[in-house]
Length: 192
Image (cartoon, rainbow, N blue to C red; front, top):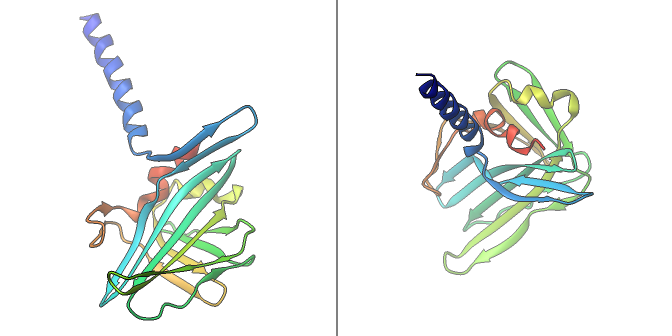
């Protein structure tokens, strides 16, 4: 009887440990005597398909020697002209949580603009903007406590508000994701 209880408890602990880590899709992890870098895979949080225009926004998480960052990637595809979007030193991303709190992430210091590619097969312009933003220590924990309702992106020339969906069924990737719970589900993945 005691052996069965111990076996059951051991199975329960292993299951719980596995359940907490199974959602972590790590893209890159490196640790040396002086360096620690861990990055999660990209996660789709926004998709818009309208006519011949398509847009996707992916987020990822990065821990670089204890500095926590949010990876941001915006991909746009259209047969029409797509204006360039840029981030500068004043660019930020804000997340409004369902509990009413607003969390800001600041630019990682670099300035860059979207790159333009052309797809000959579909005769479409493709713009990709990739950037990193820093978490502030005083609000990092709040992201793990409440779902996100809104993401506000400050580019150089404009701001964009995106209402995040609780469930996103992607037409382009044929996947399902849960953007409002992104931080609640994945912040633990970049803890050292």
